[in-house]
Image (cartoon, rainbow, N blue to C red; front, side):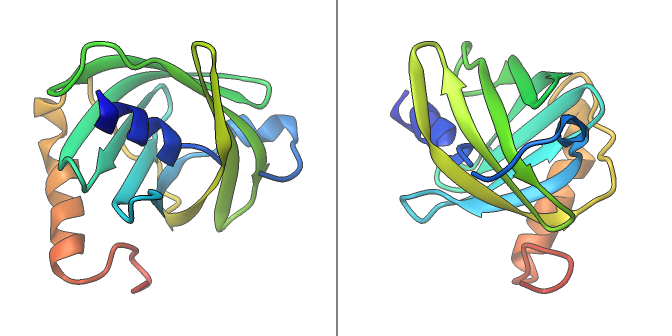
Length: 150
């Protein structure tokens, strides 16, 4: 459970907001306060997250409304409850900042950096998304988390 809470902290972000911010898509990365690498993939109506510290993926339904992204857990191998919201405060072509909200908790702002602006085709189960997971591991093994070599 501690790792799931840490995952929530990782998703936290800051800045100025417009309605089109909920159209943010693609693959984004950041680092947890623990130093663990994390990715958040935003598709059209689903999202996935990955945290290196626990080496796990979580699959979510994704709903967009004004400047808020709503995540409801579809599948995870580590938890059966992890619903949250990201209130986007800034987004542009290279970075995304938002505040993580879950139940009665509001976490600090966190910044994510763009890996790939293409919309990932996120399927309805973790097993059906194995090709996306493999792509991430190949990138990490090559020493580059972002396509542009960061």
